Image (cartoon, rainbow, N blue to C red):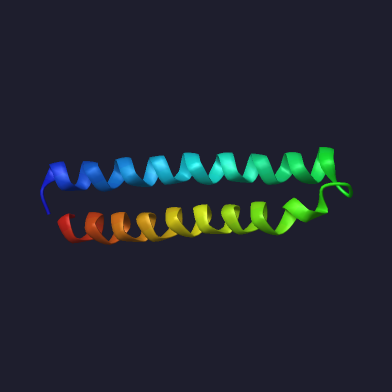
Amino acid sequence: MSDEELKKLEKEVKKNKRLAGEAAMELHDLIEDKLPDAYGELMGVAQATYDACKAWDEANKKFLAASSETA
């Protein structure tokens, strides 16, 4: 894998990590500030957080695998 492709994967990992962090903050804010009144939002926000974390994990695994191949 070329350095450029590796940098692209690393950039994707960083982007997905940022998105996962933002989703986690939204979930935290919901729990801290809005529950129990906004309990109807909980499943949607939790699912979005899960999906964002899963996207980060998949991108990170792909990056780590590619990194170990070039090492």
